[in-house]
Length: 213
Image (cartoon, rainbow, N blue to C red):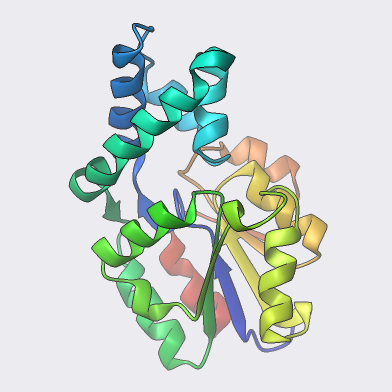
C-alpha cells in the first residue's frame, strides 16, 4: 500500500460523541410539537443522515420547517453542553499532522454545527479542510463529498484513507473507491458494517495511527 497522505474523517460517532446533545435537541422538538419523545437508542440509529432526515420520519410535512428551526436553535447550545471527543482523538490528530498527513472532515452534519463542534472541542486547527453535505447536491452515502475533498488535494485515491462509523460511510467510501476504515461503537453494528466490506474495521479510532505508520 502507498504512503497515506490524506485522511478524511467523518465527525459524529467517529471523532466526536454528540449523541446526548442530539437526543436532547430532538426530544425538545418532540415535546414542543406535542409529539412522542424517542429513546436515545432510536435516535442514535437515525443519526448520520443530517438533521432534516433525522426529523422527517417523526414530524408531519407541514411541521418540518418549524421542527428544523426549533432543533437548530436548541442544538447550538446543546452541543456546547453535551458533546465530547472520543478518547485519544486529540493525540491521534496531533500525531497524524506531525507525520505529514493532510486531514479533512466530511460530514452530513450542516456546516454551522460542524464548526461549532470543531471549535468548541478545540480540534479545528488540525484540519486542512472541512466539507459538509449542505454545501453539496448529495450527502453520504453518495461519494460526492469524498471525491471533492480528494480532488482539492490532488492526491491519488490509493494515498487516501476515509474513516467513519456507519454503513453509509462504508458505502460512500466504496463508491468513491478509497480505502475505508470503520470504527465500531457508532450508529451501526459490527455485523452491519462487515456486510459492506470496508478496507478495515477497528474498535477505537486511536488504532488508526499504527495503520498509517
